[in-house]
Length: 134
Image (cartoon, rainbow, N blue to C red; front, side, top):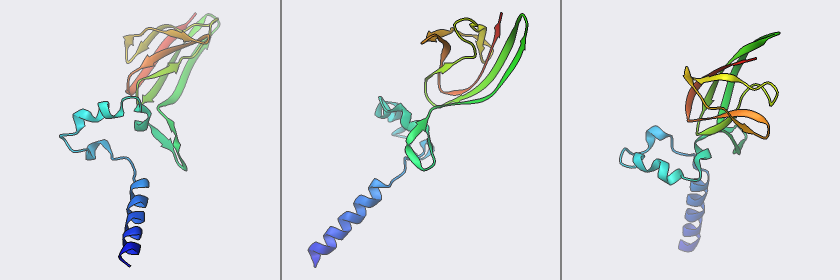
């Protein structure tokens, strides 16, 4: 009887641990908070939002409305992003229509290229991107 009770207790404990949700950052004990980045090194996506019904699928960068003001001779764009970890983000445009004067939160930014598409690397946070086209 003791063996059965012990087995049931272990199974219940294992089930509870297996279904545990991540601890929100504000509930991490103060003494352990400086270690959070070290513990998550290589697993930074664990901080990102997961899709309801599929906790294995996560997204770390969320775009908001893209505003385009385009004319015959060029144009402007503005877009907000919520970035949950450092991330490479695509910019409007392509190899023929490369974005110019790109700014992040009002400051000049460096635009790179990945597979012919312009983009920018952003740190975690809320950001406003803007730029022009010619």
